[in-house]
Length: 157
Image (cartoon, rainbow, N blue to C red; front, side, top):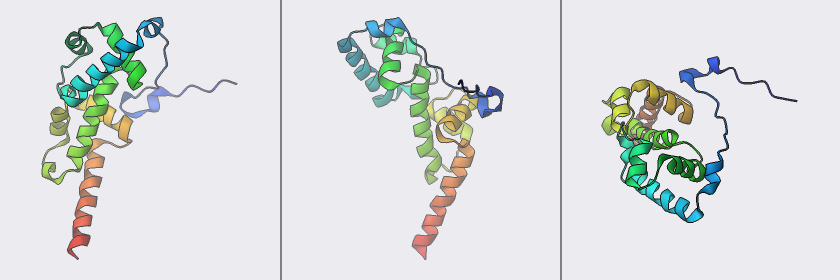
């Protein structure tokens, strides 16, 4: 019995269901090369925080790692379980979670936080944030700042 497809029009922020695709070239990359590329990806994207650059592309990363985008894409899919843009967005949203919950950045609006963590526009930030966290960035910020001030009140009592 087949399942009824999800009605895509009811999902907020244009979120679509992920479809798995099998590409033969993914199996052609040697494990040694895949591990080397994985370390390079982690170093450049995560450690050096290149994900904060809104113009950073798979082509840029492939050039830095002296490989092609097809191999890079295969390694990202295999080792990280997602595509390149989802990988960047994962780390961008993680940064945003910290900034939105930090009272030192309370005066920043959501668009400022979006730009600081590397999103090119507010819509893509809201979509990625909602997909990962389940609430909008604004809702998250309000909730976290409220919880923070309630904790301070309890300490002061």
